[in-house]
Length: 140
Image (tube, rainbow, N blue to C red; front, top):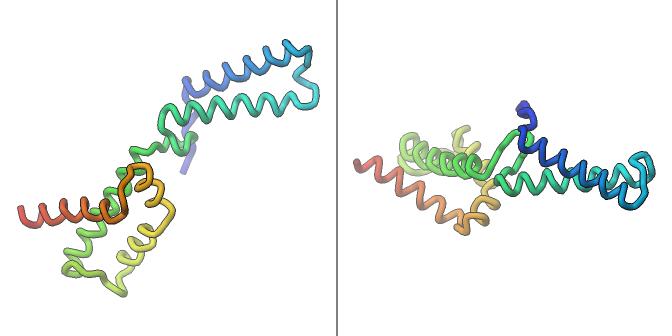
């Protein structure tokens, strides 16, 4: 994955934090080249960047991956798992099916837990929603 360039607003937030750190140093009669100055700059810029990411619901800021993208991925994975099982294995799972193994591995990763916790639903609820969609499509 290639990181996207830093956006104007994100860069502006970092610049404002850097300027504030320089002002803070000047207020204490410190120079930017003195020990501890780099740590102050780093602390302020990273805090501003974290705040920017939280404000925009970004998980991986460099690639602009936000919760809505992860939620969509999880919904599609749940739907895909059930649709594949219904069409390829008559509702069961294929013990020797490579796709079933990949789906099972994805389902039991750290990806699902943060999504369900943030949305305050269980993996069973997520599975149930996907199942209702698949069954509705099969009936209709």
